[in-house]
Image 1 (cartoon, rainbow, N blue to C red):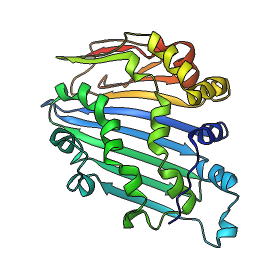
Image 2 (image 1 turned 45 degrees about the vertical axis):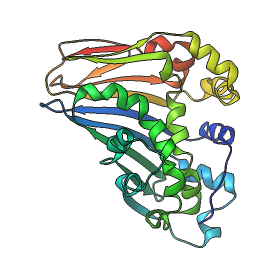
Image 3 (image 1 turned 90 degrees about the horizontal axis):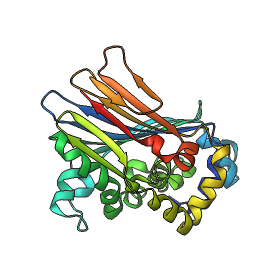
Length: 269
């Protein structure tokens, strides 16, 4: 399968025209403090945009629109990985990627998930998850696996970029300190100078900042499904479920550049 090597900047520009591109970072915590960490990416209109960029359509490809659901387990990569530490292998081993593709309604949904044995592991998991996937060269290997061989060419080529798109949704995580202390979860802006430094040194982020006013529909959400009701919380753009066991904090791309402190939050349950 031919891989499309679009520069990141081209992908960023193309996102302006995607009708919906949202990322949700979700944490489910069980009664015994085990749980699951996942990243969900929804891209409505993505297939049409990629076809426009490549100059190819379903008609020129001579095929019908497809509907697929594909699950790929990380253990098929971690079991033979030589670039991962034992800790990284253990972190990723039971994780998986789920891909939903519906060309009839122009939907692409991606879910990356890994379980954790104790909530105390969550800060390290959030910090190291993307880097471990990159070290494993997961997306490169994925494009050469039989499991992806039946995906449309434009999606397969773009598939190698999905981790970059995920990082783009929240590019300044290093400026924040995420912590878990008992039944308290917090995300605090601790070094705002990192944001200015990253933007000044990264041309892709500079372009993204310029395009931000045009990309207001692109959102980043942090969601927590808790074993007990929320007792108190801080953070803007928050939504709490009726039973108070689920809470979400949502920011759009303009907030990230214009008011990064809006991404701070605290939950006690």
